[in-house]
Image (cartoon, rainbow over all chains, first blue to last red; front, top):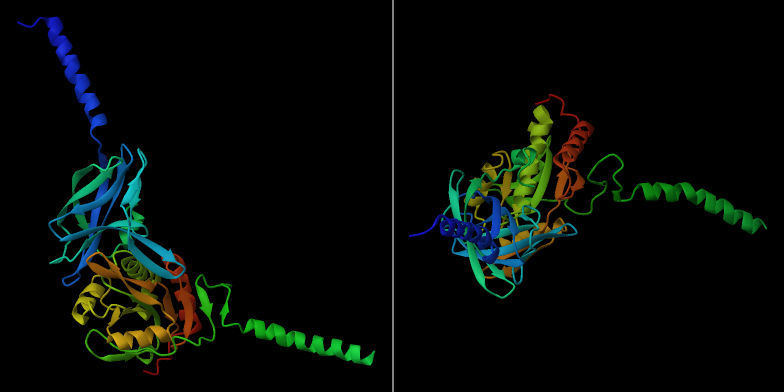
Amino acid sequence: MLTIQTRRCLGLALMFGAFTLPAWAQTVKVDGPWVQATVAGQKATAAFMKLTADAPVRLTGGKTPVAPVVEIHEMVMDGDVMKMRAIEGGLPLEAGKTVELKPGGYHVMLIDLPKAVEVGQNVPLTLTFTDAQGKTFEVAVEAPVRPLKRGHEKKSGHGM
Amino acid sequence: MTKYYLHRRFALALLPLALLLSACEKVSPPAAFHATEIREASFGRELRLPDTEGRVRTLADFRGEVVGVYFGFLQCPDVCPTALSRAVEVKQLLGEEGKRFRIIFVTVDPERDTPEVVRAYLDAFDPSFVGLVGTPEEVARTAEEFRVYYRKVPTGSSYTMDHTATTFVYNANGKLRLAVPHALSAEAFAADVRRLLAETAPAEPGR
């Protein structure tokens, strides 16, 4: 038989446990993920989002049922020339600092699409992160598809 | 003495000539245009490539319109949709005059960008946009004529293209007038197009 006292203790212990749990397991908060629509025959697209890690980690890859190959890319302008590269070793995230993957910077590249990704679809995307100890963990999200033509999103504060 | 005097006279006489020459510089600073103004271009004089329907198109086909020529590729997830979305916005900002503004998209990745896919892609932005798909040799020649840089870069299992992201803008007489950088806003671009449309008023209704 448990006394009120012990029950209270147990309750507190559970509550405490629930609060401290997230501090043990590393997580990355993913906000506003979206994938750019493609037309039939277009073999690649990109996913954009905001990432906030609670510890220093790197975004090293991902998986999605819509594309067999997922790479983490960076776009840079070298004078007038646009260059796109896979980020060696992944995209570093600092603890508590939000990094936005957006047009004109970083993106998750989805390559060799077997079919078009269309507006209305929600693309399941599992992101792979690697922590300072080299341990990997995953965060799964669903990214809605946005149209190729971006004009109006800019004005409502999305995108760019 | 007289010799010295003559020298000075000569130098003074040269001054207006020097000023005139500097005013004739090919690329002048953006005095009134937001984009880089081009006066006498020794590049981009000719464009001759098949469109997505297989018809050979040249700049002469677009007289009466302000035309922006952009080099890009379809696997490009970033700057190309940004540039084409900006062009759509420019057209909207121009209102009624937007009917006289058109984008010509030249693929630098003809191996993957087939005419059908290029057509579908451009339709997602504006069906009036023209897509040009040449053979790799034709694309190389065109890029050279425009002094456009492009290069295939392997990335993991696939490849990407580095490319010049400038939009080359012609006035309604088919003269290359502006190099619009990737970072220029739609508003500034639209203002420049409006100026170009004004400098070549619509052709007299000679039909």
